[in-house]
Amino acid sequence: MSTPAWTAVDEGYLRAYEWAGALAGGAALPQEPSPVQLGPGEIAHARFAPVGVAGFFGENAEYRKSFFLIGGPVGLALTGAASLAHNASKKAEAERKARPRWHVLGSADIVVTSQRLAATGNGRSGSFWYAECGPLQLAAAQGGGPAVQFQPAGQPVLRLESPFAPLLFVFVHHLMDGRPPGVPMPAGLLDRARAQGRAS
Image (cartoon, rainbow, N blue to C red; front, side, top):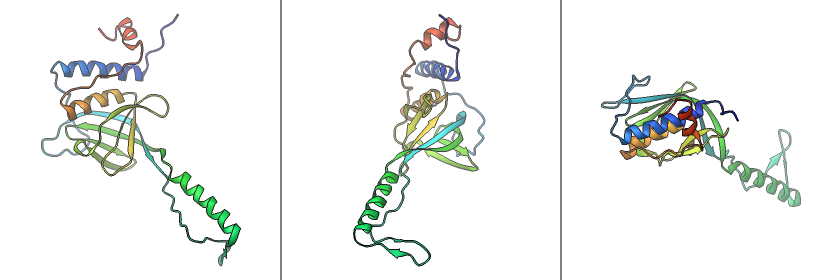
């Protein structure tokens, strides 16, 4: 029986496990030059790129309960049974569009700083301040790999997908909680890492 090939996802989980142990033992987070402008006293700890970004929200199609005009430039007003059927169809379509689902938003570079996640991508940049974000959770990416999920204040739930999402999870939890979280490891990963000389 052959051992499965070592993957980037395996490496991400192993690095997260090792960093969680080191941080619990008193090690400091890494520091690195930042590709984004930092505020006073802000420190860049890690950069993850590329990271897939997805959001959970409806399509927000607007539905009007009034009568509908359809047809050419002048339009025809629907009345009676035809209007009821048309209204029901439009309402069903609006409900389908309003139903939240995951939308792929593109990819970004994510910098973990002492105060925020700084995201740059598609010619835009933004920040997710730890003080304004809900708890960061480890989740599954759309393609089955690891991701982190959180909900910034006033925004939809966001998911950041990367083979190194478990490490992002460890760093951010350490910054927010003052201690690293436990990392749920895929079955057999530590044994494979030890057998291949990747972990002690």
